[in-house]
Amino acid sequence: MNDLNIRYVAARRYAPGEKLDLVPHDPSEPFGSGDFPPFQDDYQPRSLQPTAEELKLKKPRLKIVESLRAGRDVGSQILLCKVVQGPTDRDNIRKHAPFPTFPKHSKVRRGGSFVVANVFDPRLYPMRDAIDLPQKPPFDDVTVAYSELCREAAVYQFFYENEMSGYPHIIAQYYGCWVINRKVFNVDATVDEWVGLILLEYIEGLSIEAMCYRDRHTGYLQPPLGRPVSLHSDPEAEGKGQAKMLSLDRKVCLNAFKDFLKEIFVCMHLGVSMRDIFPRNVFLTIRSNGHDLETPRVVLLDHLFSVVWEHSRPCKEGVPFPFGDLELPPHPWEHCCVSAVSEFLGWIPPQWDDRKWLPAKTSPAATSLATGQASDVAGVTEETGIAKSFSDWLVDCFGPLDDSNPDYTVYPEEISDNGEEDEGELGEEDDEVDISDEREPQPDVETVTEIDQEQVYANLLERRREWEASRAQDASIPQRPRPHPNHTQGTPSRSPTRKAEAAGGGGGEQESSMSSTSSTAQVANSPSHQYLSGLVIREATGSGSDSDKEQQPPRY
Image (cartoon, rainbow, N blue to C red):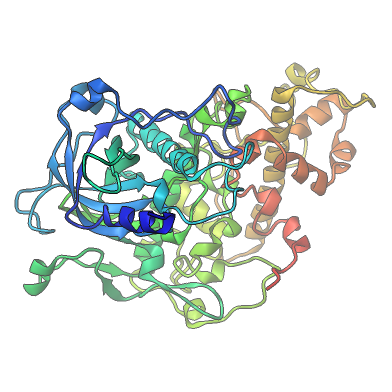
């Protein structure tokens, strides 16, 4: 039997009605990209072959109900499964959540408990060049599939152990890592083919991408504002006219996006970098394990490119965690801008698109006002139906940019409002950085990371001042009193401006001599920035920054 026939027969093993007998598996440390330590000879993937003791255990069993993504050349198979028999090994249950229990008379699929299996069968991966995994190519499909299994399992298990998975969080509940025997022909004469999988919560909803269509001229999302949207199938309730629908308006869109950003920055502070933030991976649901929800829940799926700091290469090399000294999550304004969320324009007001190199864009979505009560939406004005800018909306939603904010860390401001340096706080930092020395020192990794972070904070401070100055000049925006910030406990001073003044007596000329290009390159090359590459640092690619003026339009 040739390879094509094997792939065809293997795909049939995941058809609806097939049974999956589960054996627990403890995956390796994540590997397979530059985010993780190099793949070395003394570090090999664990075998998927279960031990004799594991094979003796009573196996949990699932029945495939529907193929959500399956077939040849699609990569991992995503299958909706009904729980026939749950796990009985209590020691293994501690590594993941107990299997879900749906209500006996659930409105969905007439009862039963359901999970989603993400099966990493190497026989169903697309034909490829041997360049997918760095550091030691070529890797075969078996290694590629196992790499993806380990990377996703590490993310979900981390969130489960930190009680950040399942409702109401944006991370789906995690039901463990398992292996199944998927030999081509289910007869004793054929060789066993053990395949790895992870089990996740069944999200009865739709992605933002699926709810909208794209404007062919602007590329903006076009959500069906003012119309009810069905997020799940419920034929029985639909026949009686009792199906629960989501009434989609601008208020719902913005509130969902606010909840999404809030959880993203909590995850950042916890130690997970989210990389694949696109509308196709952000789901809305009004169900949780068969129960109706009062308000929509936002869920982020597909964590193949997410990285847990404790598993990352910088962490293994001794680089300190970028947010390790923050008691609270960083304020979203400090790290997020329109460029970071441009794929969601249309779901969020397209008028917020201030990327300067783009041509003017007009469409019905760009000129339509919000539906519903605008006054109920954070950051939305009565006159226009939307906030003046994305930055304004972030401040209105997540609080002021000073130490009075009880929920988020605002990076300390080292210069008072009149431009004079704050006395009494310079002495202890005088000797940390000696910029008067003409020789170029060779700092260690930790020192380089510290300097990179300080430069980021200085750039953020500069952008914040420019933005606040523009707000102050606009009489239509109510002005908030800005108290002089005080350093909070556990938040050390990190301003390179202050250090330059301490070392040079003035610091103004020395600070201005640092070009934005060199500082941006320094930040981009730092290990911590590579770990946080899913974020947008405002100085590097920020909305409204000077770097935007230098960007060139994309070539088509």
